[in-house]
Image (cartoon, rainbow, N blue to C red; front, side, top):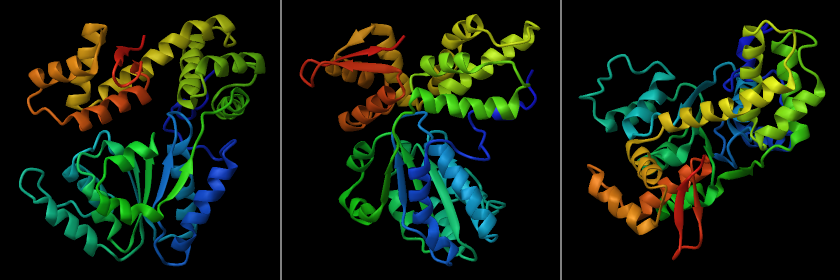
Length: 334
């Protein structure tokens, strides 16, 4: 039933992209200077989860590398590599400059200077979940490197720029902003149809069942692909010839739960602590939440930073905030 398991993974970069022509064309135009030996202005791709931001960025950079053979490229998930050192290390690793870097003893300034001097070829870096960076001043330092082009990915444009200082805001004023919306159900069906064509045997699932997956996914391509993947695996394990509607309905909550758990596993220490506090209380006011957090955290962050953390948890549907600022209540999502 499954002929190529890779295409059923959310990290898979497709051979062609569906229903993102405007975004693809816009980002392609932004990156044109690289084909002329210059660096491009930084680009910010922002919008909800599962809207194709990461996929489009990686898809276009791969196309660009076919045209500019000397182009270096590195993808960094700032949720996993959120410290200044880890991000710089990943960027140096992308150009093979980490052989004598010691995680415990090499100063961060040394890493940055080494990155500045590695100017033999143009370098495109995708900083995914960029709002997760602990030290946003790193963006200012990277902006000043002449051969380096940044593609930034974030859920919320306003929250990202609210968290940086005036100096960085002024530098990123020319950042090309590309807004992504959630997919419509018909668009998800087209995306799933490609995955079926590339990764499953003929006849295992029809259009009405793809429409059922799309309806269950809530506009999130990651969820849709996750439902398809789990449904295909279950059908294979049960030795049935097709993916039935019953299998899809059974695997939908499991797929959503799998994505939710992966998100929880990637939370920073402070974000996980806040999430656990809200989960334990069921519902809690911002003031009680912050007081409980400060009493528990080893190094409590400011109220402003905590608000940023909570906003991130909301974007990933881990919690929900109800009411206005004065009467707000935080609850976990089922």
